[in-house]
Length: 272
Image (cartoon, rainbow, N blue to C red):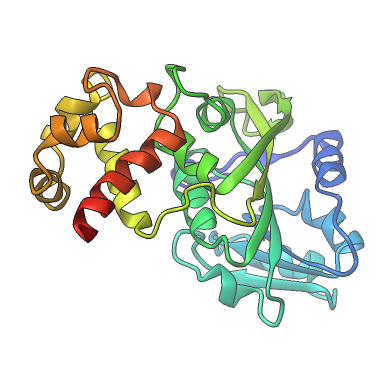
């Protein structure tokens, strides 16, 4: 029985499961992390093609089912744990890198994605099934109304490639929304070449704090730590002008390069 509080919608269409694994293209020489194996729709195919499958399941009621189905497989490792708390690099030892495949719960998919990006030193690629609207946000270019913090974050660390849409009828229970399978390849080097990444993400987060407001107004009302940094450099308007960004623009119009330039403007003045 799927649990609504866990955002569970189990994949029931075998053709969709086969297509996801085909796009993922597992190999006999790699370690794969599957987040939320559920009833094993993807797992059954992964264990046949993959060197080692580390399955991370939060719902303890599904653990006996998964152990019964796959526990005898030498290449199957079942971990009962929280995708929002686990150390992904420790999870795959002795492997140093792994790829991830998952049908993520709708209600925490964005938070899990952020955790996976944070583990970019050991996660090289992800093939994820997400709500279609989330993928639209991920790939939204500068100027698009869907563009937000997640768009900039993914662009900085990943190359995104939407693969195909999945109808609600492919799941049990049937959700009210469509899904999209997307491939996210981690960049070898982050696109944001700066020394203080935490400052960059503070700026992006503040910039999108109130979407209808200008970047100038959002920076003026940034959280205390960032606000103090901006004020120490002459205030929001002076900082934006120094970064060659028009203060009346909105955050969704800024390119990743402009966010980086804004960060460097504060860094350079700190060094000066």
